[in-house]
Length: 368
Image (tube, rainbow, N blue to C red; front, side, top):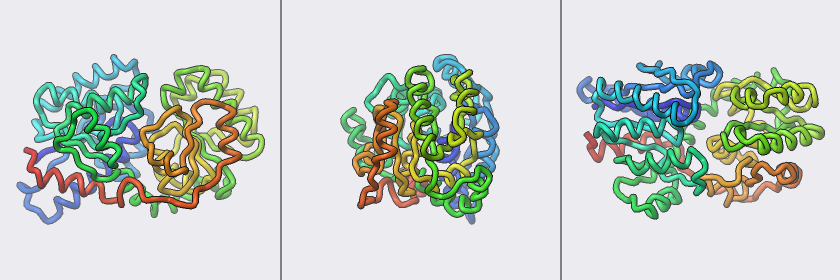
C-alpha cells in the first residue's frame, strides 16, 4: 500500500509529520508486504531555509523523495508548475492514494493532479470555510474538498459546512492533527527557552505577532495599518515579530524605518517550529493572521487577536479566546489593551490522536 504525501508550506510540514509518525508506528513489527509506503513530495512552495528545511529536521520528517523547487510566483504560474511536476511523480509512483493537507496552492495542485489521473485523494483538514472567496485559500479548500474521496474534518462545524455543499460521503470527524503536533512539540519546545534568552524576553511580558497572509501583505493599506498598530503598541510593551521573508520584501523601505523607530518592536528572523511554540507559550498575547497559530494560541491558553476580517476557526472566536480585529489599527490597539481572559476553556479539535484516527479510518475502509 502506497501513499504519496504532498506538502509545500510550513503548516503542512507540521501537519504531515503527525501522520508520518503514525505510519511509522503502524509499520513497526509488520512484514514488509503489510507495511504502508509513504512517498513525500515537497513542491518547494516554501523554499527559504528558515521556512522549510528546519521544519523537516525538527519534526523528524524523512527527507522528501521529490522536491519540485517551484518557489514563488503568481497563483496561476505557481499552481500550473506544481500540477505538471506532481503529475509526473504520480504517474511514476502509482500510489493507492494521494494525501493533501490544508488550503495552499500545493493542496490545490495535488488534488487536481491526482483527480485527473483517477487516484483517490485524502484531504486532511477538510470542510473549513471562511466564506470569503476573495481569499485564495478558500478556493483551494473548496476545490480540494470537491475532488477528495476521503475528507477528514477537525470539527462538527467543518462537517456541517461540507453537508451544506452536498458532500456527505466518507466524511469523518478526526480532530485536528495540529493538536497531535503540539503534543509532540510541547516537551521539546521547553528546551528551546533559549529563544527567550536570546531576545531578552520575560514570560508574559511581551506580545508575539506574525503576518504573512496575502490579504494583509499584498494590500498596502492593510499592511501599513497593522504595522502602525504594532508600532504604537510597542511604545508601551515589547512586541516580537518574526518577519516572514515575503512580508519583509513587501515592506521595502518601511522595514528599515521600523527597525530604528522603536526598540520595543523586536523584528527577528523566522524561527523553527519549537522556537515559535516556545514564543507562543510565554507570550502575554498573540496577534496573527495565521490559522495554525490561532489554534495553537487557543490550546496554549494564550489570548489571540486575529488580524483578519474572518476566520475558518470560528470555535476559537465563539469561546472568547480569539478576537477578530481585521487590519483596523484602533481595534487592534483596543483589543490588546482591553482583552479579558475567559473563565471557560472548552476542549476543541480533539485529544491529540487525530493522525492515528486518520490512518485507522483509511485502513478500516480499505481504500485501495
